[in-house]
Image (cartoon, rainbow, N blue to C red; front, top):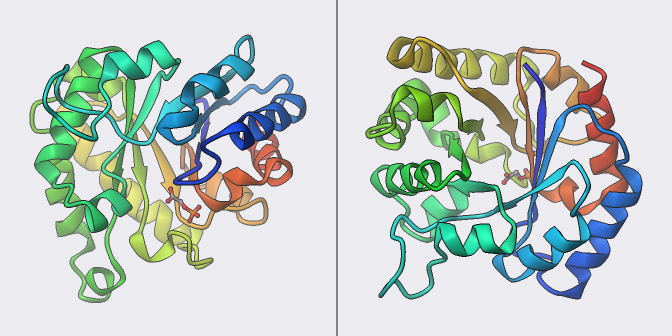
Length: 246
Ligand code: PGA
């Protein structure tokens, strides 16, 4: 399966600095073979997509509304995102779940709307450190997957992306070992195959960098969702090169 390297800029680079970063990526990533997507803040999506027009770098949003329009203060609709140039949307990132009350149910609704509108959702799932220590990782992931995929049919399930992001590895510098990531991703893949007969791309996310990417990507992992390092064009493009080598 072709690897996908996705950058989650989080709440950084939302103005003209985003265009500068996009320009650097454009210069450094010239003829990638893997899929690439960068997810700037909403305010920079249109500008970044103008800079990256005619490149192989796609643009994603960091969230997407489940409604089409109307009284949903603070939300951004799929049509608005498409107009701005986004073709991907991160859904259910652990920071949304932790700080903004995102639930398994709302993650499912957002993912469904994205698919309906032709935007590829990147559905994030992952356990906290205490859940891992308590030995409930698989139960937690199962509940997150059941919520996210509640109304998604087979066609949708094969046209989206899942990102396994252990919460304890996000932004901490502590990466899951390649073995841990591999085992948990195998569990997710089996869950998808049991429900749909096949599995989508499954990425790993959580302190991925140019030093650990090769080992992680060699373990039957279809790509990475990269936070901190996605703001560093040299290192991000290095990861793209590593992904291209598979
Ligand atoms: P990180 O973030 O690479 O900074 O750990 C990953 C993410 O939150 O998607």
